[in-house]
Structure formats: structure tokens, C-alpha cells
Amino acid sequence: MSIDVNEKGPAQEPESPGSGRDAFSSRLRTAKAVAWAQLAGLIVCLAAVEAVRTIIRPFFGLAALGGARTAVRYGVFMAAAAVVLAVSALNGVRLGRRAGEAEAPWLDRVSSVSILSLALAEVPVLLGLLHFLLGGYNRDFYALLLVSLILLFMYFPRASVWEARRAGPGRTCPL
Image (tube, rainbow, N blue to C red; front, side, top):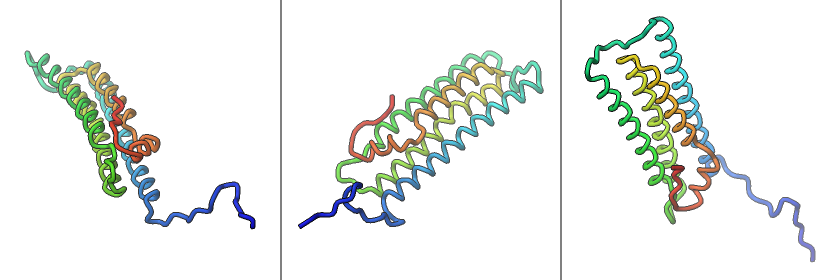
């Protein structure tokens, strides 16, 4: 009596087009496309600021903020900090797979939370752009652009992270 075993292990059935692995890679690919689009949006914001600074020299802003300049500046940075905390909390609480949870609902949740996190990651640069246009603070814009870039790369959809979250429950927030 002989048993035939090939080097690759026991034969496995090919995955059907509607299988979980196919849905997983499709959702991951979509989230990655959104992330790359967000990066392109950050580059467009940077190009807009540099264009304004080049065309209008010196640029002091479009609005006369007067004594409210400091309050507006603090408000912009506080809002950006709130976004950072919100994205961190959202990812830490909502992405772990619950025990016994089916693949499809978890995949829906992880892809939507991932895309929402990427959208929120762009909020600091948009606040910085608004702050630059109102008050002419280009250094504040650059600082908030850096915050958005950091958030974008922290929460960039990665297969290894999604696989770890798929494996089971647990807090997987990078902060």
C-alpha cells in the first residue's frame, strides 16, 4: 500500500471567484487605491500652496483675522489633534475580528473603517490649507501636511495588518 504525496502537500481545491480570499484581496486593493488617491490629494494641496506663494509674493492671507489670528491658529491645531485621536480610537476599537464573526461582515467593517481612516487622515492638511489661505501661515500648513502624511502611512492598508486582524480579536491600533 503506497500513499502518493507531492512536495507541495495535499491537493487543495482552487478557490472560486466568490471565495473569501478573492473578496479579501479585492477589498484590500480598493482600500489601497483610495490611499494612493489620498496621497495624490496631499500633493495637489502642496502644489496649490506653492502656486499661491509663487504668484502672490508675499502672501499674508485672504482674510483680515486681526486679533483672532492666534485663536484661529490654536483652533486649527486642536482640531487636527482631535482628528489624530479619533482615527487612532476608530482603528483600535472597530477593526479587531470578534470571536465567531463571519468573514463578510468583518470584511465590510474593516474596509469601510480603513477608508474612513484614510479620509480623516486628510483633514489636517485641509485645515492647514484653509489656515494658509486665511492667514498666510505656510509653516503651519507644512506641519499639518506632515501630520496628514504620517497618518496616511500609519493607516495605509497593508495585507499583513489585515491578516493579523482577520486572525482574531484584539486591539491592533498602531498608537
